[in-house]
Amino acid sequence: MNLALTLVIQGVCFPVAWAVMKFFLAVAHGSHRRATKKIAAGIGGRQQERKGSRRAEARSKEILREARDEPRRSSTWRASARTKIVDEAKGTASGEARRLVDQARDEVAREPRGCEKAWPEKWASWRSRGASRLLEREIDPKTHAELLTDWRRGRTG
Image (cartoon, rainbow, N blue to C red):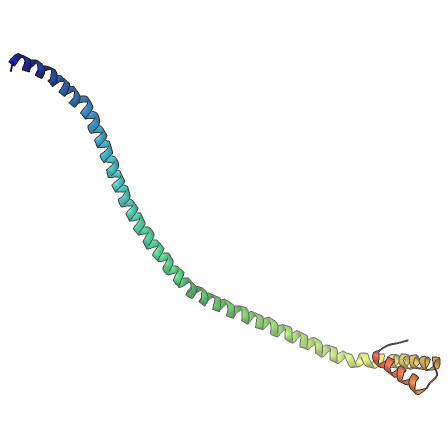
């Protein structure tokens, strides 16, 4: 081949190859570097996620353990609270019972005195009512039975 033509072709191709390497390959190499950094960051992020996942898994196991232990602790607490409430209720009930018994004793102690005072008045009113009913009607066995039945039922007339 012709040496001059070879030199001319090489003279033209060398600057074109140099320009391609300088500009286009540099851009491609920069893109490649950025992509490599993103991939490395993604891998690092995944490693962080794995560590976080392990921590979350350990925390969830701890929470589950606490949740399993909670019924035991709360049942103990509930039992002590229940005992305390029952003891308080017993104390309140016994105090109330004592108060009611004392009140009933006071009423029983006062009742005979009240009956003694009211008895003559009640007896007199019953006698006068009975006499007035007897005087209103003729006394025969049928009328007598009706009066007794009315009196037993508590009717007054």
